[in-house]
Length: 205
Image (cartoon, rainbow, N blue to C red; front, side):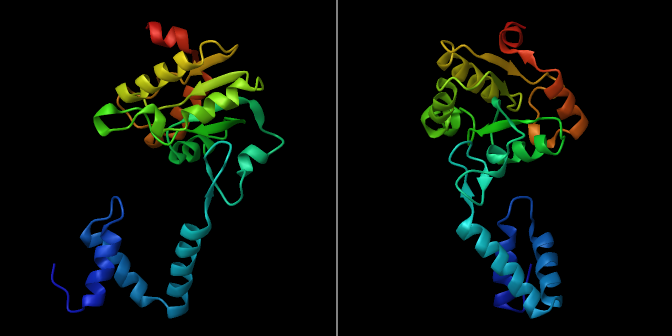
C-alpha cells in the first residue's frame, strides 16, 4: 500500500495496530477522520487520551472504573454475597448485557496458562481469596471460557478455597468447549448463568 503522505501512512499504521483492524480498514478510518471538522477530530483524540490517562481499575473487583470503587461494587442493589469470577473486563460487559445477574464480579486478569508464561501469581487470585475469607461471600460463580486453561484455573482456585464454607458453581455448558465467553449470544449466556451447576458435579462429569 503506497501513500503520498507520510502523515497519512503514520496514521494508518497507528490504527492498524488495533486488534481486528487491517490496513484497509485503518485507511478507511483515517480518511473518515480527514473529512471531519478539526474540532471533532480534536475532541475524539482528547477523549481517547483522557480515558487512557484517567481510567482506573476497581480496587475491589478489578473492573474498569472512574473512581477507586466501580459503580457495580458501589451499587446498593447488588448482591455482594454473590461473586461472578471472570477472566477479563470483556466478560463483565457480556454478562451485564444479559441483565440476568445481580451480584458482583471479580476480574482475574487472565487465566492460568503455563505455555504462555501466565501463572497464578500474575492473576488476582490472592485478592479473590481475601474477599472470600472475610465471610461475607455465600456463592462463587465461575464464568470462565470453557477451555483447558479455563478449567485449570477453576480447579486451582477451588483447591485454594476448599476450606471455606462456600457454594461454588460454574455456568452451564451452553457455551461450547473451546469457545470464548465474550462471543456467546446474550440468550445462551443468560441461560448458562441461570442454569449454573455445583462445581463438584461439573468436575465429575
